[in-house]
Amino acid sequence: MYSKDTLFSPKGKTVRFGALLSFGAMLAAIALFSSCGKSPTDSGVDTSIGRTGKKVLSTLSIGEPRLFDAQGMLNGTSSPMELWMGVGNPSGGVLVGYVTFVNGVAGQAGKLIIDFSDGGDPGSEPDLYPFIASEIHIDFADNWGDIPGALKNGGLIPGKFDYTILPKYLNQTRFEIDLPTPDSSIETFLKYGAIHAAGVVYGGLDGFDYWLPDGPVTITVTRLSSPIELGDTPVVPSYMEFDINDDNGDFIDGSYEGWCVDTDHAISKGVEYEAIVYSSYDQDVATLMLVDKPFNLGAVNYLINWVSVGKKLDYTWNGTDYSRLIRFGDIQLAVWYLIDNTAIGTVPPNSGLGRVSLSAAQYLAQEALKHTDFVPMCGQKIAFIVQPTLDGIPAQIVLGTLSAPCETASGTVWADGKDGFTTSTSSWATIFGLSEPTP
Image (cartoon, rainbow, N blue to C red):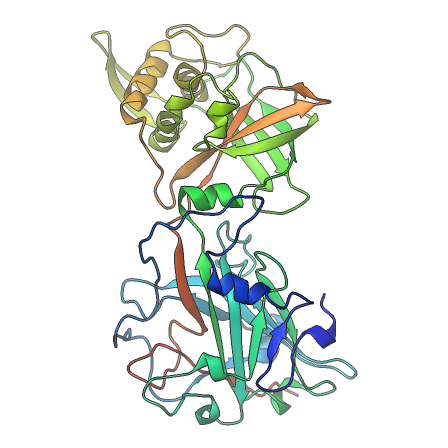
């Protein structure tokens, strides 16, 4: 993926992927990441997480570095080493990625792989909101005491580590680094090590808007709901299902349960449309008049977090008590009442809502309108708007949801940072060891 002359440099030198000499320094020095005029705003609040005073979690050990099986990481018999952010904060600690090693073979160097796109279970889909490193520091030594700062009370000193790695491109989350000893195996070079990274996880509404694609994507509807629902148990989870593909990134690639927000246009199943994606909190949704009542989009976000298909709803409407398992048609009709010009108490013709309840839809809309200022919290659903066209002709505008990001947080990351070996009571910096690969 990278040429070897752009990877590890001699001891004490900075490694810059490619020719972007000032890029990593720029990331570290300015309000990180601007793209096509968009950047998350600086709230002025210190949202950094990391070391707090001299507090160290009790899980951090004093003794000897834990040993990891580098060869096992390669052949799948052992788990990758975890990268943790903010463990020095007693209320923090976030798994943001993994480290793996690839052993060298004749004529090739071994590789160190640092991956921030997999901050979940190994093999999981990349995190929506990954840790973005502004710089990475790496040091290896035959004895752990030789790692800079290991024998000092203040803890490890990343600025004095042998190698500094800077990103090659904006929002890089995976680094494949050649070890500096071609034609040799891991055990001849790696004994003890420390890996540190500084960076940020973007979040909040501005972070959500930042990660959405700027350019066109494609959308294909894979399911449109039937006008007939049989039986008493709701089985259709939403009005439609659609796939999104972005050739310029993978943030929004995937399959989504969706809702219609535009009864004036149609959309066909199995047809690939070009589309633009907007946050439901983007002012452009109102400016471009993508929905009839953009001032109610906060209420729509509340609605999709409050109810779901199959949830039991006990309510009173016009003096009558009802008990109902919510169906997709109830939610879809409530969405139209909230942000489309569909008249309250009516059902658009040929809408395919199945066994919809007018009273339930009106009740849902009425309750949601009490929350027009709703903003999803970390982990809740946040709506995005998709504006499709086919050969320049507008098609039906649809709505999908993603997991809402947490607030923007800058921080420091250490390999084996949660349960690893630290040499100082005033720092949570960690050192790891590598066992010799089995012959």
